[in-house]
Image (cartoon, rainbow, N blue to C red; front, side, top):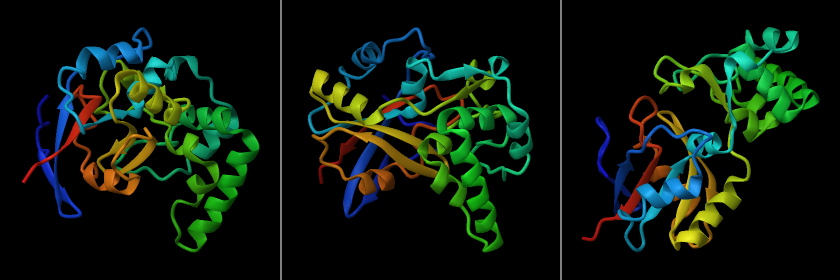
Length: 231
C-alpha cells in the first residue's frame, strides 16, 4: 500500500483523521475474478475496522461491462445528441456517439429522450444536471476514453457495474471486511455500494474520498483502504 503522487495520506472529516492508502494491482480485465483480486491484493494489508473501497470501473471490467469502441455502432440519434453534450474536465461522459449509444441501450430510448427534453429546459433556467437526474445512474456512470485513460481502456466504453450494492455485501460476507464500491474522479464521488457492516455513512465516505486518492489516469490503483488514525 502507498499514497499516490499529489494525494495526501490523511484527511480530517468531522474531527476524525483518516488515512487513505492505494493498492496497486495488475491491469484488471474480464478474465479476472473479483473475489480472487480482492484476496490476492487486499487481505494481507487489511486491518480490523479498515474499510476497503473499490473503483466501480474495476468491478465493471470483471463483469464484462467494458465494451470496445470498435464494437459499438451508434444510431443516428446518438450521433446527433452527443454533439450537444457539454464536455467537462472530469471526462467525456456522453459527449461521444459511442457513449451516447450505450446510454440508449442501458436506459432505454424513451428515458434518454425525455431526459434530453428535461435537460434542455434546465439549460433555459441555467440549471445543470437535470438530464442525469432523469436518465439515472446508469447514464451518469458511463465512462468514455480520455487522453489519460489507462490502456487498453483508452479504446473502451465502461459501464457502471451490475448490482454494486449486492457485490459489496458479497465481498464483505466472504472475507469478513467492510467494503464500499465507489464511482469517483477528481470532481466528485458517488457511493454505489456499501456493506451493511460499515461504520461509515455514505456522506462521510464522500468527504473522505473527495480528492480521489486512487487517481484516475495511469496509477493502476483500483482499490484502497481507509483507516482511522488513532490520536
